[in-house]
Image 1: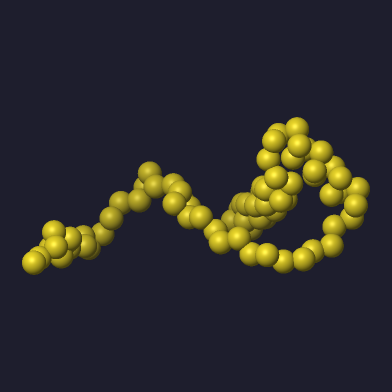
Image 2: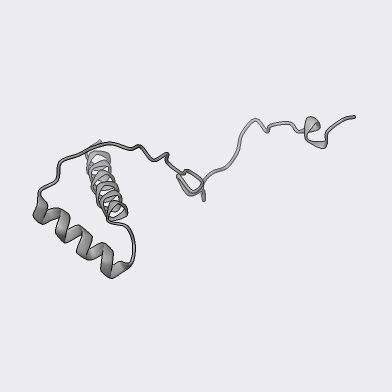
Length: 78
């Protein structure tokens, strides 16, 4: 019995001009312990409560934004 995907062949090239980087990427969550000043944690939990999302999600958003900002800064220098 032959599966229909067995005849699939890759093209030599693909055009990703309009592609969106990371569209289907879902990072694995890692459990770890970090130390955060209590005033910062209280502030993040307050924002998270208003937005009705987890404070760890807020931390991830802020860290990703910082990383993206740094990458854009590095790219502009190259």
